[in-house]
Length: 287
Image (cartoon, helix red, strand yellow):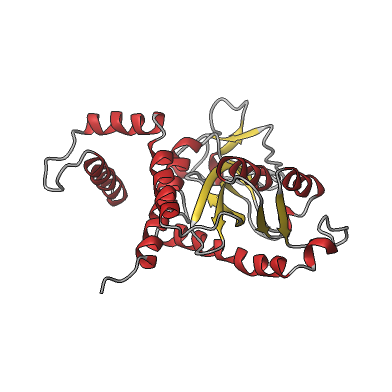
């Protein structure tokens, strides 16, 4: 029998397909095989990205988005894979032992390197931790670029979890979604000489939090003395509201799909839903 999660997932996609095809909710549901084929077509046609872009364009048409001031951040998204699935790449079969399909595994003394290990459940997920003292999990990195007027999401990206993924994704989203002079607020993880130089080369003023812990910050006094820098540092924290919504309402505490393509589509659709909820709240109340 299907689990409750599988039933809810299929129901959600059926409603989405009906909405796109202008069908009534009471119409007969899709056949299971048709549903699977349509899901693959949605990924191939990048429908989630197109839908998200239309929502962003609608916010711009309503003049609710800033065209000059932005914030960026990344969050760790735990993949739909357990640590036990991270096995050596050259291992033919999992080692036999007691416990059946969910046998106990002792990782003590092993070095789980990306070059030598990969998940048997989700090969694209990487073992990663964002903070010292925190347990490493098989994860992806989700990234969001927001504007500073109302905290609407301008762009999103999902990448493999690595140490430079946040900064690389930030530049990708800027190139894709921001044109002309702008400012970009970010936390101290983005305070590197290469990233700050890349922003300046794009005509973007780096309002990045200074990281002077045992090193010299790439952000100098020419930037920090302006009132706009302090304003960006206050506004950049609103991106955390987006991640909070994605994790709670959007169900992002534990990803439900395997592979980067499916999880990226989930992130784009969920970010679009977050924008739609905020747009409804920003709409003027009819007299």
